[in-house]
Image 1 (cartoon, rainbow, N blue to C red):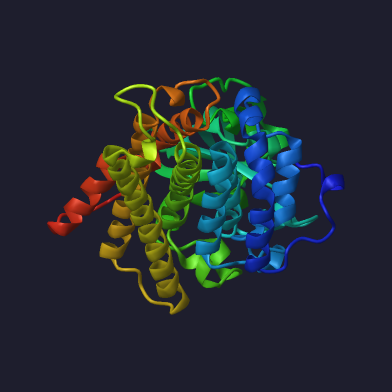
Image 2: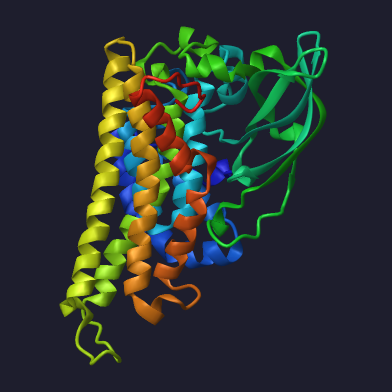
Length: 401
C-alpha cells in the first residue's frame, strides 16, 4: 500500500493539473522501467509518486475527494504512463478504474473505503470463481482468484463470484468488495510480459461480506445501481463495458506509441551491417513499416477517444446509450488492442537483431503488449463477433456490452 507519509498533503486540483503532474513524472518512470521488469513490481517510490499526481482520483466521486473528470483524461494519462513503462501504465489503469466502479456501490461501501481519506486503492479479480453462501445480511465467501494486478498496493479488492440456487445452479454474477484484512496475497507472478504488474493470487477463506458491499453485474450493465443515487454525475451513468475495457486497452496503445517514438530516435542514424549496408532510415521497407505502425496507433487512440467522448455526452445529456454505440465501443476497443499488437510487431521485426537483447526497450514493450492482449476484455474475435451479431439484428447478451 502507498506510504501516506511520503505523499504530499495536496494533490492536483483539476484534471489538467493531473495531466501536467503525470507528464513531469514520465522521465522517472522510463528510467525505472527496466528495474520494474526485472524486479517484478513497480516499487513503493513509483506508487507513491503516482498517487501524488492525482491520477487515481480522476474517476473518483467528487464527494470523496475525486475529480469526477471526463474519462478521456484518464485514458490519456494511462497511455502516457504506459509510453514510459507498460507495466506501470497497466497498474495505473487497473487501480485507477476501480474508484469509478466503487462509485456504483452502496454509499456505505464507499464510506468504508474513503471515509478516512481519498487515496485508498482497490484491486480486482473478476473471474466468478468464488464460493458464495447466503447468510443473514450478506454472504460467506471463499475462493482463490488470479491476476490481481497491483494487489500489493491496494487496501481493498473487488472479487467475482457466482450466486447459486438450492440445486447449485448459477443464477447471478456478483462483484464483492473485500478489505485486505480478509484476503491473503500469494506471490505467484513470474511471466513473460507485464512482469512489473505483480498480478498475484488472492485467497479468501470463509469471510463475511455484508450485502452493501455486493453489486450485481447485471445492474452495472443496465446502468442501475445503488451508487448512482448518491453519485448522479454523468461519469456514473456510463457502462462498465466502456470504462473498464477502454482502461485495459489504453496501456497497450500507449506502450506501443511510446516504443514507436523510441524506435524513431534510436533507428534514425543506425547503419546496417548486412544487406548492402546503408542507413535504416533510408530503407523504403522500414519507412513503410513506420507509416503502418503510426497509422495503427493513431487509429486506435482516435477511436478510443471518440467513443469515450460520445458515450460520456449521452450520459451527460441523460440520453439512452444506443446498443449500436455500445457495440461499436467494443469493436473499436478490441481493434485498438489488435492495432497495438500489429504496431509493436512491425517495430520489433524491422529493428532486426538489435531488438532481441533482453532488456531492450523494443523487446520489453513487445512482451508487455502481447501479454496485455490476452486479457479477456481484449479478446478480438469475441468483441468483433458481438458487433457483427448486432449488425445482422441478432440478439446480443454480454456483460461487456
